[in-house]
View (cartoon, rainbow, N blue to C red):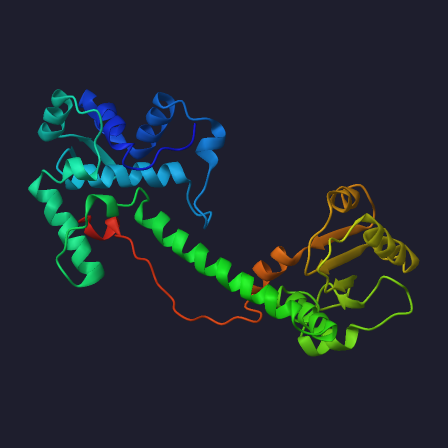
Amino acid sequence: MAVPDFQSLMLPLLKFSADGVEHTMQEARDGLAQIMELSEEDLQERLPSGRQTTFANRVAWAKVYLTQAGALESPKRGRFHISDRGRKIILEGPEKIDIKYLERFKEFQEFRQASNRSRTGKSIQPDDDQISPATPEESLEQAYQQLRDEVANELINLIKGNTPEFFEKLVVHLIVSMGYGGSVKEAGKATRKTADEGIDGVIKEDRLGLDVIYLQAKRWEAVVGRPEIQKFVGALHGQRAKKGVFITTSYFSKEALDYVGQIDPKVVLIDGSDLVQLMIDHGVGVSSAVVYEVKKVDTDYFIEG
């Protein structure tokens, strides 16, 4: 099954803690994973940033909300147990605990109002149908991914609208930004047209030039198939080259992808989607608009020595 949203984890988490024993978050995650019969694939699913698993993030926020409602207590750092209020909730036998359910508690109302006030500057209570099933991190990362996708789409359209010469310069700039070829000036000197069909240029793999990478840059709309890759590989063999990178604005056929996994020399295929993601990651053709720094509480600060 898919990983449940954090509100769907509230009741199972409260029931898990109903034994009255102090638990760690790891114990809670292990227990809930078993109760909800989550697969290893489910447990390995990560947030878009890759910094945390989706399941760990959602369990953590279920615990935060239950604590703010007074259903759970955290007497020690990194540990929690059920409260008297939590036991009363269990006795009520609710079919589900969610944000709407927790709104009955004054402490939780104050928590929500303070949270909304910090975001909007106003003390407002959202309608029930405006409550997102996503955790704050998920909402932030989803918004970030949407903005990133829009930038990527604009980049690929701009590249396709430019000249083949511009595309080749862009490829060199990107490769250098990724740490290959030394400086752009050095790479520009190293990159050269050759008489061999299928090779657009050559760039140093490292600053010392201990090895070289042969490049092919294709500003195409149509799919790049196996014959084009074979032509490139043939040119590499002619140069006794061991490494090559084939970059296109379009995409590769399955046959082309399968082919490069079976050959020597080593050939890396970068399609249009990968290309613009690399450009964003390495700051090529883009600039930072706004930077948001996310803080978390330093619990060590509050421990008296």
